[in-house]
Image (cartoon, rainbow, N blue to C red; front, side, top):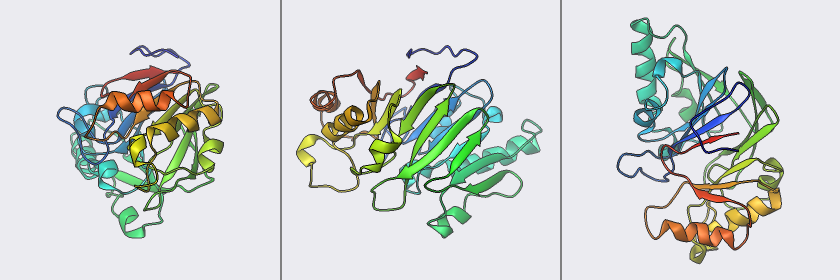
Length: 255
């Protein structure tokens, strides 16, 4: 696995657009990630600032789909800007097809806001579903969060990217993360907050999850806005011996 901007014919590329929870740091974005192969460009979550960062790597005309984990604002804030972008680009003739957006419907009111006429079409996904987007295969698992939320396993050409989404510990994370080539794992809490704040993982738990999954690489994301972020890596290293990175805006991984 290379950290590089190059992508070959049979590779999957992950670009970190937004590694932040809650709200973005300057010149960054909250939860948002671009996943690309030769056949498809998919935005995974669409937090605040996502579109500005996305256009550094991909023209909006070339975005095929969006997949959402849940409806907290730091994961969907830019969806509604994207609806208008799709409309304008189609009216200008620069897009010829709508953007397809996928999300759970456990919150029917929120799901109903995703479709936008002929410009954005919405589709339901759920735990246990299999979704094919181009040459990517997605499956969805349980999380433990204050609102319904999906973890995701994304497979392409024998390589596997797993995203925990927002979650406290649960054993289904180990199942869906099994043998991941890259585990993109939320790490919103320092170890001192273990057992004190629900719905999120500590860095030590992220490391433990990577170890139990047999993940080849751990990338910590959904980062807090306080403290020494390097401490998150050090705490994850206590429970996981493999390579660990902090997710940073613009970082790219080729699988």
